[in-house]
Image (tube, rainbow, N blue to C red):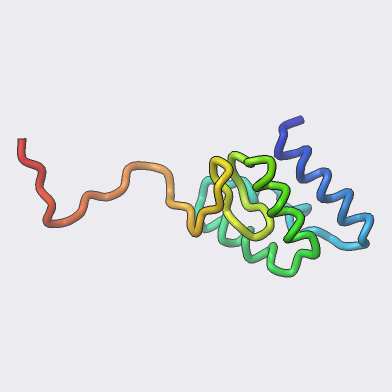
Amino acid sequence: MHRNDLAVTSLLREAADVGAALPCANNPHLWFSERPADLELAKAGCRLCPLRGPCLAGAVERAEPCGVWGGEIIQRGRVLAVKRPPGRPPKRPGKVRRH
């Protein structure tokens, strides 16, 4: 089992103990998508989660490599404000490289 799967499984068990349904239980792959729009949906799903605080704290403590944890995007163990799509950023207009 992948490390992310173990962390999500642990949160699901904790939610069952408090009698809550976690938003990430329905579609956990959304929380680990590479698409920024998916991650924003996942963040929105976390807003009312009763385990939002412990989820984020655990992710930061474990230095999770990626995903949405506790309503925040984590990449390489750090909280990101937004996720940029993969690929090279567009060139800035007006900036010309001269060789």
